[in-house]
Image: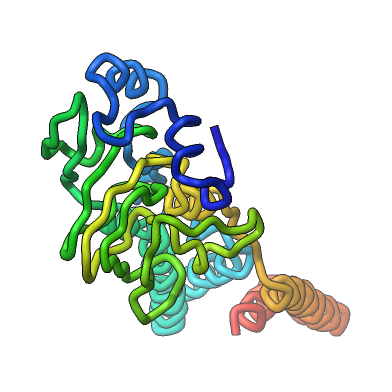
Length: 282
């Protein structure tokens, strides 16, 4: 259930999440929610195999043209030209591969922001559990030095300050409060009654009821957008690709004219064909 939790008072949040401020969830209720909602972790889509990622670097039109030029140069005995062109193709492929590989690692960087363990109140007992075993409705205890394991609504805050640079870009720790209620359209950085996964407590202590875990958190939404984003060529890249095709076809046209002109003038067909190929490669 997705709500504007920051726009509700803490009692309403606790009521909607069907939990208890002091006792937390029962063991049975926790197991039921865990089975229904899954673990508190970022879900990663199937990775692109490294070999496939590398192979895609050779599918560009101009790269295929250069590979063809390499073969023709080698066939004509112009080995220095063939080596030079191949070196250009390989360097271009390596750069593209490294860029895509780093993009694939972006989700892993987000995962490193999550806390490994958390203190939670269940059945009236405070206990330390793996952060992946948290569910909405859990009551967590936080203090200076802790990293937030999920998103939550504060129900108690004592001199609590949280550094949220990883999420909002705000370089100064934010003073939090449990008693304020904000309008539904309040921005993420101004929701001072909320805590978010991946942020760190720099001062004070507090208690929060978890409102979202895993891919339902703000960090989870970011991870989802990263994985759903499709790579698109920029307008400049599209124009350069189009220009490259024009140049290739124009070059082939000029070479064809040269070959035909030589043949008309009585030159050897084989000689003119080799001259046209050499000119195209050049």
